[in-house]
Length: 621
Image (cartoon, rainbow, N blue to C red; front, side, top):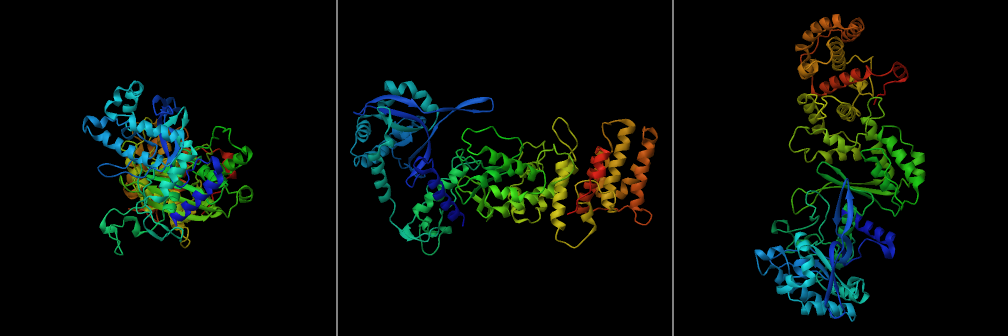
């Protein structure tokens, strides 16, 4: 299913780009090229042209190699890895490398392999460019290459770059643009490595089968150099007597292999205007089965961390439509109701939409964490429900609660490695796209952070903030949404519910009032009752609240408006009715979450203007 969807998307990309498409055709790939050797028609090396372009990231500017479509570059392995056609690194094209200090034959062996392959292919191209490259390969000697006057000028830069890709030019024109050379390459490509014919599991047709899925998938951290999505490299994974068959165990045609690899590499690359989403260790890519990219643009807006409009792009054709989509997306992220009529007037809601989550747990493999395929309107409704469940409080200036911020909140700000649990991001996305309960690991992680953290302005640590309260609320909403009516539902609201008689919720409210009394009496102490007693009050309230209630009488007598706070304390105690229902000795984990919600709601209510309280009605799930 994944490979089929990616292969179809590759066809869409080709059709969309036409002749000027940046998506490589079968037999070609994309490579970052650093230099070009400019040859005379007789094969003499005239100059070396750097192909870098300056890119600015933040305040820094650096040189980036030029991205070019070149003949397919398969994966390399073995003692002498195979050469590529007309585009390779300095060890193959110039026979020069830093590795020569360790192994004197390192670069010479690679140059010989490059010369043999390229002379064989170029001999079938009757053009000046092909003859020039052949003449260069025949006359150039890598042993004396470092002393060549042209190479000497760039030698330090080439060696410093490590393995810099190089292409050929003849009189200033790229050899790879020549139609005769491209025809010779395509003929060679069609004849090599096509020995096994079978039924492709992706397309269903009989075609040459790819024994090796040679194109690496790049752009999945931390192994940016590339990993395999499909592969068999051990007898233990082979079956049906396909001894040493590798890819023949799961037959995918060469054409389908190239299509899915190139489509996925495009989705992961910087060339894709709808950037991949990074959440924890998970890399998320997404696409619609349509040439219209409005679906992907809107989906991307739903998961952006900020609501600021991006810089205006001169290539944008419909700024009004894109601005409308961003406006709708920002409202969704605030938990507001989705304006479906307006949205699906701009976008076809029945378009099939795909979301793919990938990780690279080791250097060789990519792991699929999740894959979802639904009509776009279903995807949008589920994301809208996600943001609605997380809505809490009245402050519209608070940043949207994206999955990235949710996962980030589970990690201690004091930890040396800011790494969340490896499978957490995938589990959260699963809950979003299936409208199912959020993972219990998320809830436990937030409860543990609240227990362990102490407010620290320098490290921007807040023991209980709106984000943590929203996570608790959303988790409990999803957990109890489809269960019979119970008392916990009445407290899973945006703001304070003063009518609720839920004991855990009332105890959380009471703790917030007692803390407020202390602050009004003595200001902000070095260690207030939240630092000293919150964790104990949340888990075993019966052992803490009698002490806090006695302490509050001293604070009430000193506070300027102590009588008002005393009245509020009494109201909460009346709802608790502790004579008939004593303060519980223990609270369950769910009740602890309700306690924290009660505390947060009451604290937030202190700063809500009276006019807003009169118009606000708590919204139940």
